[in-house]
Image 1 (spheres, rainbow, N blue to C red):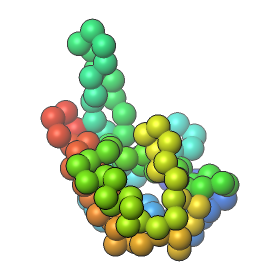
Image 2: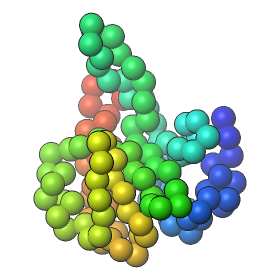
Image 3: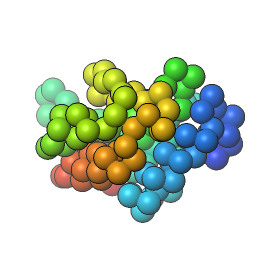
Image 4: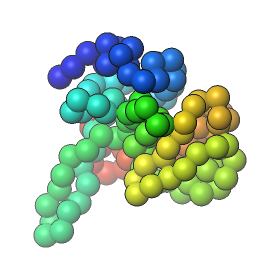
Length: 126
């Protein structure tokens, strides 16, 4: 448990972090919670592991780091085509990196967040 607003305000990207939190709050209808010391999460879902077990993770979230905003989103159908229209970004295993929100098309980002949340909510989302 931590104070999300205080974390974002003290982060390297407070304005972008606050704007991203507002976007995810609108899309999800959920209040953000801290997941560990550096990740702002919205909702949770269970995902399958080997051997029939499950683990819990955030449905979506982000971390406003010095180098970039790191978004944790489920890859939904249309992921690649949306990323092609997003603007300046990079990706890693399970992460979307954006240096500044001004580098991307916010309408496309909203569509990515919406479809990713729908994908995460399939099945065992909370």
